[in-house]
Length: 602
Image 1 (cartoon, helix red, strand yellow):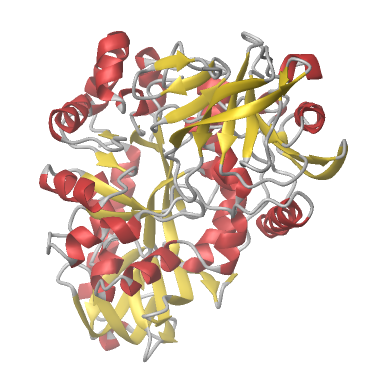
Image 2: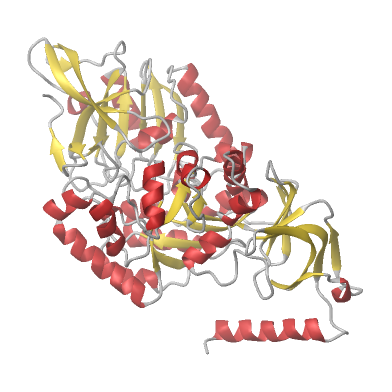
């Protein structure tokens, strides 16, 4: 028996003593609350007795109250297991694990399953390990599902480092690694099968190893049905999840196949309301329906909450409150095979959320391993700031760009071009064609048609390529926006109403060692340095970041006239080549369904 199991066994022996020895007592009793039983889907009045990190019992705990027992009177309030976010990216919040947790814990979320896919694309295994080491310092539970293939689409995009099955043994043996993350390299089933079958071979090898050591595997199956969905499920070792389900029809088929559907409800992508119809309208069993955030900006965490807000929205769609809570507690715990969280029962970890208003999911108190961690929306514990090593900074290898490098050229007076069609609150895109004017051999943006140049500048120092196409639907009236957050390989993505401001925006991102830059009339309107891999910062607290991002969003609307909500997050997803239909990488315009680069100029 290893040391960890031995320690747990000794703790359990002490719990038995406390329960059966009349001279021993609980450390803490939450008395008189309405207990939410996510096992039986009941609510009833009961005490919860706690010893150390563990639950002693649920019921009448008066015999466990001694002279040194802390008693919290919670009559009229509801006792729930702490919430689990089963799929999220710290990089999307642009925050370290530490600062994200400071915002998340007071909302009742006690377990986070982070996917370090983004830092893995920029810095490889070294970057992922740096994030895992930070998580080990925190009081909440943070586990990681790591990518087994970087980049997702070799030959169509350029990452900072490559990751493959050969890297899995080193990563998966870490106890803070839950398993393999979203297997995006096999999301576009037929194109990958036809054009890059070697990706499947490497994926199956990685998955086989993960399964052999008891690790889980997460899927990524946007728009898949029938044989293609079946192939994706098998590639993940027969039981996978999917956080890219966007329609009721997808939800139904995936639930019928036993897929754990991670119903995404984040800051820029919201799919829960459509997915939940499979349950509210068709009556399907919800045991494999799981709520996740995927991507959250700090302002939303502060203003609305985290998993508590997603549960609230689910209740508003007609789901019983206890069933909605199951989707963020016992359902994910079952999916991941967690034995000690997700329910409140004897011997489980005392990760608990006290809810004062069940309909609005107002969190009154939060307990982590039996200790009060937050009350009335504020932390009651100290969490020290975390500084990342310099080895994960200065990841921008690109030198400054010139206008000549960024312009899109054509002959004649007009050009027929292809343009990516933006879809608000989705990482899916459409496809469009437009006729644009050509002046002095340069294709001009057209604000009347809302068609702008969209470019990706390779920044890892591996190719120097610049991919070029056009974008429709961003609703930008002036200036330019560039950022080093561009899923999944995180090169520099830029769009704008004129090439001069686009050049300045890209060069500002380079000068900051990564981040977001907004330019108007060749002047900086607003910027945000993100020096950790060009993705995150350890220089701002979560609240400071929230204020900064909120200010940038307002400036984007007021100074640049951008009508799209959360513009930086939307911009970052238009290079995600695992999600249909057209995307842009440093290689150019990508037809995702055909798995090929297509010309922008028709």
